[in-house]
Image (cartoon, rainbow, N blue to C red):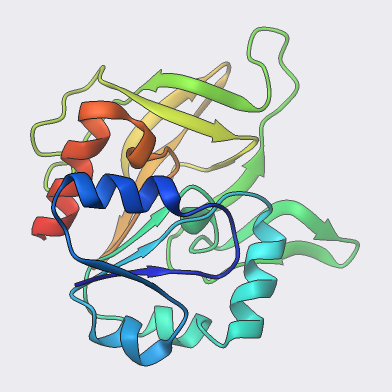
Length: 200
C-alpha cells in the first residue's frame, strides 16, 4: 500500500488518478501509524514552502517522515520541504528551515527576460541516474510549475535548465527521493517514473 501524505498542501486528485492508472493501492492519510506501515510513501505538495513546513509541524509528521525506512517520494513542494532551507517566505531572522534530508537549498529564480517565472510547462531532464529513471532518457520532457528551485548538490540525480539556472530536477538520499517536476502530470515519462518508484 502507498500512503499519500495529506498535509493540506494542494489538490491530491492528480496523484490519486496517476496511481489508479497504474493499478496501485493507496490511501490518503495524515495518520502516523498508517504512514509508518505503508510500503511506499508519497509527499506531494503545491503552494508555499513555509506554509507546508508549518502544516507539517502542526501535524507532528516531521519526525515521522524523517524516520521512515521505506521509499519516500516528495513531489514539487514535497521535495522542497525535504531540503535544508528555503528562500520562500523567509523571515527577517533568516531562511525558512526545512527537514534537512537533502543537501540542497531552495532558492528563487532570478529575474530573467528570457526565462519567465514561475517556470511553468514542459522542460527536459539531463544527467540522469538510474533506478528512478530506468527507461527514461536525457532529453525527455516533464512538467514543471514552480518559482523556487532546489540547488545542485551531491544528492542531485537529474538536472533541468531554466534560463541561466541549472537546478536539481530530482534528488535522492538513501531511501528518500524527490522530484521538482510533477510526474503525475508528465504523461508517459512521468508514469514510468512513478512505476519505477513503486517497484523500489
